[in-house]
Image 1 (cartoon, rainbow, N blue to C red):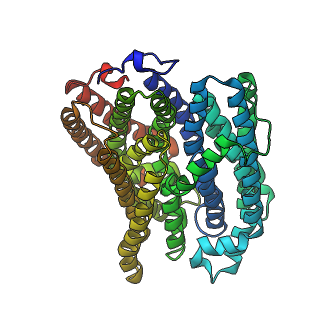
Image 2: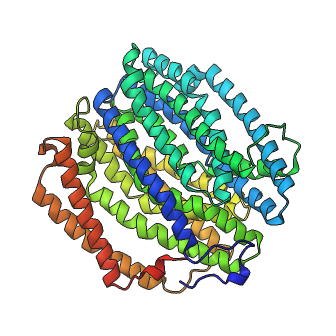
Image 3: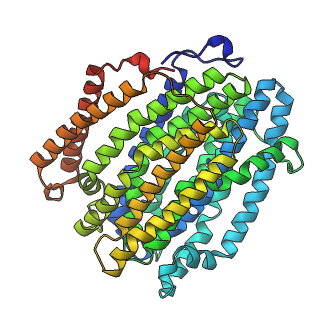
Length: 532
């Protein structure tokens, strides 16, 4: 791939490979977070298993997490970052500070109202998102009770995301990327110290969510002060740039959270199925989030401010080359990651979760949904790059259109795939929900790609056919090695002890990853192809 013309860059151009370095920093921090997340999930599955109050906590946790995508790193960030970079390009420091102050004030006011309504209407929200529990008033009551604890988390995490967006726009990626580590460590502490002190132990996890949000904000607040951009909360609804963010946000309220909308839809359907279905889908999604967080979110986070700067500087060539680079990196990581999860669904599930209260049947059921969901990983990864291509141009309506079709496809596919399994009482009916989520992800990526090409926003750089051939051959070689080792090792649930399972899994993943890397190099991939 040819490097962008330095003369066309923004006033503070990055060195060659800057996007790769920034993505690597973000990914390194995310890797630490995901390792802590695996420890958290392993402990959670071991101590609390599935069903009952644990299912109630998962729903109570998922709802504010869904809203977090709207008011935090999803809709708000996608609308806020391009406007922020537009003001930065003008070089007006006072205008930048005024915008941040008024934006923080407006965001805080809106989220406070949403939190208050969420706590007040918690019983109604619980019935809405878990309709299958209508005949279990105790379970709905537990969900509503924990919702009242977790909802204020939304305020802390929204302000944290605003802070992270400001830091990312100034090239500070490491500290914001570390905040999920703090979240996971706080949740582990809540399981070990808070949960045993409650008659209903998962309530301790709900309080852990709230405390984690506060600590994440507290971690970033001093860094804003060092930049001289710590917000002073001012009423900002009349501020012109804040109103512009509001106009851009309205379409993104839906489009930036399409994956979360699909998960909420899946959770609602899962509440109608066998006990534990909500939990199995949750644990599968946590495993899917590993490659998405490690690579997809990193790429999307790094590329959005870069694309918005290119667009503001009217550098069409640099914009096109950056987007092309992002798409290639998404496939370079997404295709083998999805294939690896598909081939190792049960070994990974058994290694991470199959201890204590999480039994062998839970492992099989979670592996079913992980297998189905893994088919969508490359598409999920591509969407993390494709959507920012529109947001960077302050076009939020086009991703919204794709999101509407995606959610409609998800609902239709969920009904079509799950209903026959539910009617005939087929074990693993929740796998239909997972497969619908994966296919809906493919629909979303395909629509975003189509809109980009139709409007002439993006033209693929030369070399895509060769790149696709390398990728296909390398993944085929990886699959042969992984399957060979898996059959040689045998049933994963027969391996006793967490350390033995982890050791064998690291061996298989390491061998598969090394085979993939060697094959890509043998087929002609060089470090210069990874640089922007």
